[in-house]
Amino acid sequence: MSKLADAIRRSQRTESAPMGFGAARPAAKATMLVGVIAGSAVAVTAAKEAGADVIVFDSRAKAVAPAAAEKLKAAAGATPLGIWAPLTADAVAPLHEAGVDFLAFEPESTAAAVLLNEDLGYVLVLPQGPDELFL
Image 1 (spheres, rainbow, N blue to C red):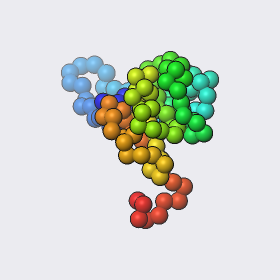
Image 2 (image 1 turned 90 degrees about the vertical axis):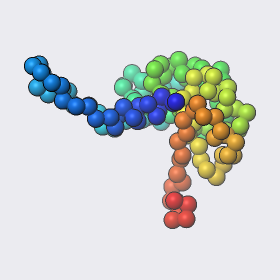
Image 3 (image 1 turned 120 degrees about the vertical axis):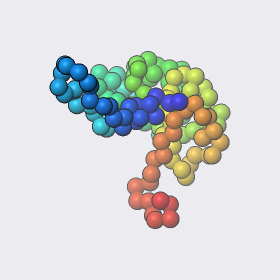
Image 4 (image 1 turned 45 degrees about the horizontal axis):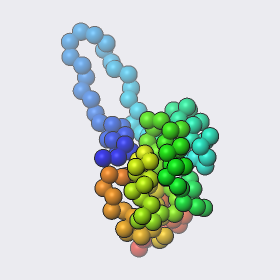
């Protein structure tokens, strides 16, 4: 199960009011996730420190090596980290082993074999002006 899916479930979970004597009202819980698209390891660290719930590393120009993904995951810490990059089926397993939680992909340029790893989360990136048939 991906950390992204867990974070989405936590944001949608409702909790019952406490019973008995004590605080009358618990603190309000966030109902959405704040995500940041970062283009460098420095931006990933800044997003984590700013309190982002989800970080997407944007590397659409080139593939991300597993060693670079490990550095990005170290910069993100416990925050769910996704990669938005050109993907091949052979590159998915090493990225998952490096600590990447989910992959952002574009449907026109991503082979279906990339989406077979059930341990990763996947985020579909819609085109700028999707037509009705695409949706």
